[in-house]
Length: 281
Image (cartoon, rainbow, N blue to C red):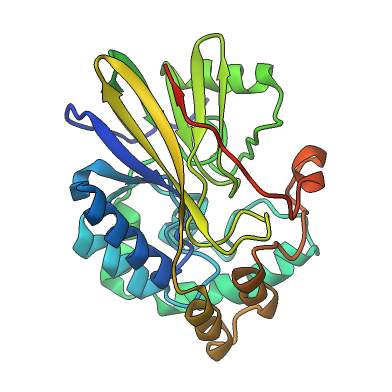
């Protein structure tokens, strides 16, 4: 039997800025806030799909920045693991692989750096957020509905996405975890992943991604956007704190060290320019 999920129902709004995976990348998060301010988004209109904490150099500072900003977030698998004092990040990496090996460096670092106040914030995060937009329900989750660390990609079969949509009980899903932005429509229902800001999207571009979802004249529009930030300083900070060199290089090259978590389709697209189309429902 599935455990009960904690869900926060948001008050009625007309637009949201969506992002995932800050990954302790304080430089990227500060750049995103500047962008949100420029676009006129209030803090309660900004939603993170989880994994505020991760690979980069400023886990505690990133949490405190989120707290001060007041932006909304759900718990990613990293937050879930930190909240319970688990010994690993819960990313479901292949044992002994490069991602697993690197996680044994960055996860203990994050765990050690978190202040009691930051850990309390992490423990307070809900599993899901939900809201109404365009007269339909939207659920914010991390990986899949069945598994917080479940991977759903653009190439994931339609029937698998529909199964997760049906389990969620929502008309549409906003997800994170996989690190790549995409939107899929199936049977009039939307699975949207805004991408992440803490790491590039494996397309040889150092910029990261966020999305905007808004209701205009009764219809819901989505658009995907690039975000530039001081990736060089973020990489330097990782090196200064002894974090994985491979991930520091990823910030500088826009390419992942490996494609262990990726399906064949996404692996074949490594290094290719990434375009995610806007749409309307």
